Length: 410
Ligand code: ADP
Image (cartoon, rainbow, N blue to C red):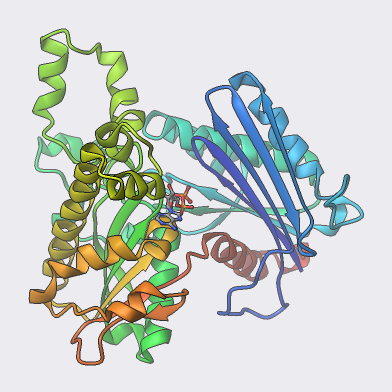
């Protein structure tokens, strides 16, 4: 069963085609085709790869308003050109879309209808970049692959179980009544890695208190109690919480009114400062990529060292806060680009968490290939490195939904 996944971000559009077995599986499958479009300013890079390892990469200068035609070119590469894997779009039976923000009304995966599209559009106010890209992906897939059944899976969905004390901001109560509340993001990744962690430690999810650390370009934590999210670091938007590649994470909101009042920044600049000019990039001045920051820090760059230190400091505080929300900790999970690959982030973060029972085996940590257990034999908390499988999880959730609601469509 061929299922296509579209994973729209603010500066990238990723896509993957999976050939899934006809019965539900809990084992992630490798995609048979992957496409990735990345934008930096007007520079665009399109990379496509098929299951035979054949890869093409094209970089070009294009204006921002031509991005959706590039997404179309990427998807047409599924059936035309050097890395094509299907003879025609008609072979693709289902398309699963990652939608970042479901707003107050959408959390469970849904079949896409005109109503669902309207609701996704209504959330543009809260998550303009992400949801607009998600909706463009839906409309493009409807045009190019019209016979496929389409489903949406929401990044906010896993956090629908947050208790009120975690999701209501301590501002005026009216905020909450008007949908200004914490939603949480990266839910597909947190849900998958918590479930996988239970498999790896050989216990039922219902018996475990787990903190999952999704550390990629965007970073967030989730406190998962008996398989349910009870706390998380991102909030109303994906800007709250940890320090990230280019995002500040939580800061004193008084800074914003200070900047505007003193004329140091215009109100219209604030979004750009907090989303694109802060975080690892803003502090180090080197890069938003943790690899570059670590390299510069090792060469003695003081600002890169500071960026790394702040990242770790905030991560430790976040993990301890999540553990407090759980009232204990059985497993600590690292996932996504930094979580899977940076032994030094894991080592430095865990070093300050020994009081919670977190004890890393240094050799296992340095040589970890996910999925791996890097805890020392006597560590009360199991420390796991798990490969993020967001795209597969979206494909599987979409297929399960379509199978249960519209089996005739498959
Ligand atoms: P996204 O959130 O876009 O899906 P990823 O999960 O791919 O991002 O994570 C991207 C980040 O992972 C990069 O910005 C980089 O900082 C980090 N990363 C990847 N490989 C390494 C590595 N070997 N060491 C440290 N950081 C890494």
